Length: 100
Figure 1 (cartoon, rainbow, N blue to C red):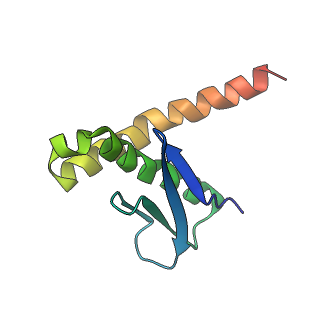
Figure 2 (figure 1 turned 45 degrees about the horizontal axis):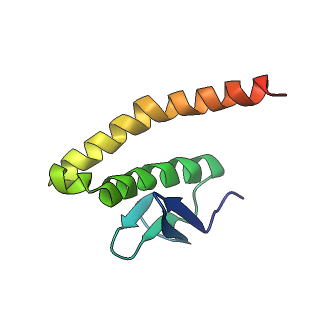
Figure 3 (figure 1 turned 90 degrees about the vertical axis):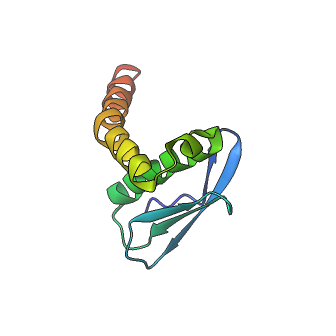
């Protein structure tokens, strides 16, 4: 089962915890904590960690303060989830295939 215990974002270590909850995930910037629903599949866990990590990236960089609106931030993160993350996954798969 894919359940990493932490992730480093721009040199800041975020602990990852898993628990029963309604949301797929949450990111608490002040506590440096990402919480993931414990009943997710491996794929859902990975995608949720990536999603919550994007929230952490915006906060660590200071850009979340410019957005100044949770809905705007969530829209931006979902845009990256839908448009950019698939490109990264595709390129990583192609890379792994070509280095064998």
